[in-house]
Image (tube, rainbow, N blue to C red; front, side):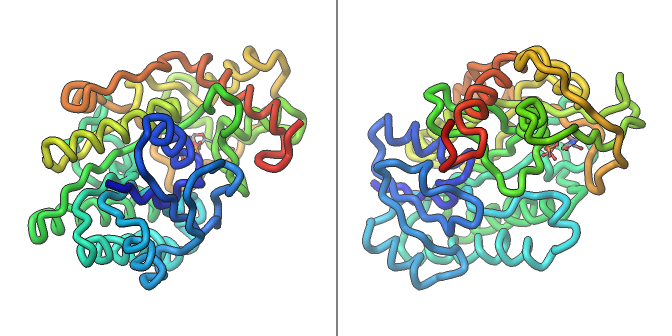
Length: 330
Ligand code: UDP
């Protein structure tokens, strides 16, 4: 059995690939390198290709005898998705449809899908449970919600087995220091705060300090990238043994404000991190905190990183070692 990992050169993808490899799974990574890094995939079978290239995709399924898919590939910048919805619908929705149709043609019947907490939009309560309605507040979340719906329909019509994993805020890096978070451009809070600590940026902009939260800044549930990676392996085993399709939240169940993240990063790095208030970012929900009991109960998922400080420490280790990201080791 061989797993096709789309987007395996990206942040969560590469951490999952490392674990799959360590556990002896047979796999091939398929990535167009639009945001991923070839350097993150040492010694891993790799095909450089786009999801929209059905011919190459089909060829890859044949040559590697693909039986299962873990699907990370997709665009994920919320702000950009609001300005360029065409790009997001094409890559995230049409690209996924091409992948699913290729799977059916090659009788590959299991897929783990990288979904997102963004499918919920503004939370109706905290913590958010899986049965809460999908009500995305931005186009990025909308594309994830559409793919979740397509998976349900393909499950019913074609017997496709799927697990949708709704990530909350992925953060941190593998403790080996060999892979980490490197988005270009970087838009995520923790790497931007650490770049400020490294003096690569003068200050961090806080997008809104007038939310109805304890300190006025948005609250998010940060979850370590290796805990997310573990969940993919468990989800794959779940599908292989039970064939029961499902959807799971992946978060810690603890919310931290933007200010708390900045203060913790200042402690971890031993630096002063300057910040400035900026306008709210369009499409940002106020609070996103996961209820993840379902993943614990059904998948047996046990996140190892529960403290924000420890998560930021692992990210800092990577940033100090690779201040310029992949290809720029200190
Ligand atoms: N954020 C911020 N300044 C930045 C980047 C992010 O204040 O330069 C805030 C953002 O508005 C959100 C939180 O940090 O409330 C987490 O944002 P991120 O982009 O890391 O993840 P998201 O929650 O959008 O997936």
